[in-house]
Amino acid sequence: MPQPILTIKKLTKIYGNNVIFRDIDLTVAEGDTIVIIGPSGTGKSTLLRCINLLTHPDGGEIWLDADEITAKGANEDLVRQHIGMVFQNFLLFNHLTALDNVKLGLTKVKHMNDKAAEAKAFEELKRVGLSDRAHHYPGQLSGGQQQRVAIARALAMDPRIMLFDEPTSALDPELIGEVLEVMRDLSKSGMTMLVVTHEMGFAREVADRIVFMEKGNIVEEGSPDDLFYRPKFERTREFLWKITELYGKKENADGPSAAEDTESNQPAAEENA
Ligand SMILES: Nc1ncnc2c1ncn2[C@@H]1O[C@H](COP(=O)(O)OP(=O)(O)O)[C@@H](O)[C@H]1O
Ligand SMILES: [Mg+2]
Image 1 (cartoon, rainbow, N blue to C red):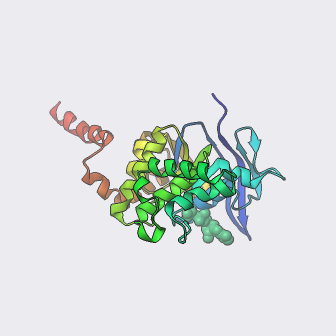
Image 2: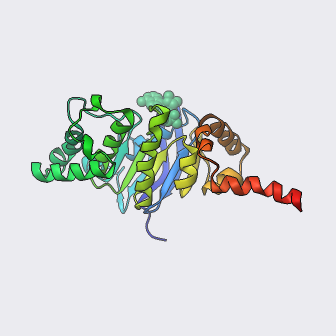
Image 3: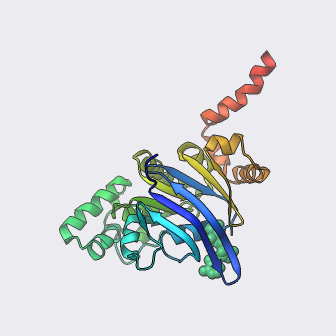
């Protein structure tokens, strides 16, 4: 097996006397898209924040390729260049155009010259389908477009891995699809991704593995088919039922997925037999 891009070993995070999670292990292989699901307050955001060094774990290790990024003296700025993060609320600078939002890290962090940074930023906007919005300010863009700018900004740093924390949760329903489409393309292009989302249609189609977290534990992980059709734990089944009921409606409006087709065809075939 090739060396994983991301290796999390016995990671522990404690706020005050509240243990958010203890001894979490997770590995992400190159090119994989891992979707993390689980109830609110379970520690999913905290886990991503630890990986991006926005908060420091209280135990355990995080390795990016062959480097321990949680080691004392690790270069946080460098680590964040390698680990792109996309937040629920975009976090764009409102006084900067889309292009300048994407350009900023290239000039300030990567010290590219203005012309090269501009060209690169424009390429990244093109990649998320926004070359015609380069000179718009966030206030002139829809939420879906703003989130795509945020994705372009993270991609501009040429990260090894992209983290997404509920990237479509703040969006009106009609704007979710355009963001998921960009993420789907990114996944198919071979980007390594760790995605916290409730979008089960996306998870089922794109995830190599789904990780179910509850109360700070990884309850189980497996392929989408394993978790949807052969969950090991009743808790996993219950959560997936609940979440599909809540978020799965519009997904069905596009017609059932191939997997659902097979499922619904099975009983009919048996009846005919
Ligand atoms: N900065 C913080 N200080 C104290 N407690 C926090 C902080 N951030 C998160 N928590 C707590 O950690 C737990 C997990 O939160 P979070 O990682 O946001 O969960 P999720 O993303 O799964 O909804 C929650 O109980 C939350 O209140
Ligand atoms: Mg969260």
